[in-house]
Image (cartoon, rainbow, N blue to C red; front, side, top):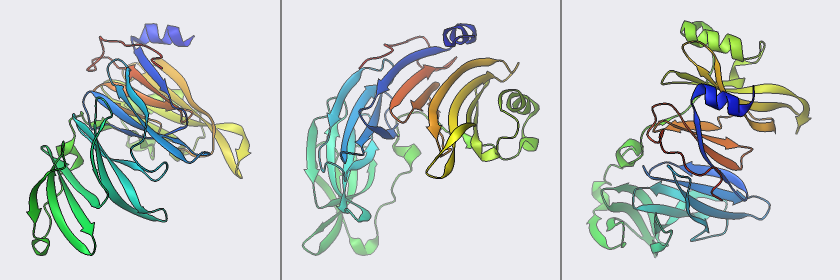
Length: 299
């Protein structure tokens, strides 16, 4: 059965795909409308960022970097902005500097090299300021960087909000490794027995039980070795939880020696990363964007 036949039979809809120039390092899910991605070209030691509309796959901006070519990352994403950080030193993991850009356009709104990000909530950023030996904590307007309040360092800092409190996007569902089939429900055991090759180690299978579907990421043995480790092929299978039939299948990585999750679900959309370079959206039944399929290859 072909992939198109599986899609038609299963009622699933592939929405769009986006190919990075390097390796997809991270995907930020804090906005309900957009995804922000980190694209690293390892050989060149260059990092850039991109912003995609979740529903359509439309690229709002890409190849954007407001700081160091390599030592840079994303602290947080809201419905209005994306907050970037630098590093105190290339050989130290501590973050240093705050740069805020408009989420829809990618335009830098303000930047402060002396700040260290602490928290983001309700239109403001809390940050430590370290300059010429002086250290204090401030709350600044997220859109302008204007100081709204200063905190007494002797009285402690305000409690940072949790990721759930500051995120406008829906809950992110991640797969977990299969440890013991005996503890699973009969429907799940049947899906595993039918669609996972007997003898695979438990750590080689990741599972997400979601809304009547069983999503399986399976690391199948592959001939050859990589860096002295046996190679595997990473396969995604979507199975109907009720009757156990295969609804969708795809190869996420042809050859790898590391078994790690390559997908997540948010707002009823399955996002996959293929070969560490291609981000795709598959609209699941009953999902937020189920009736609105965008372009397949916007790039």
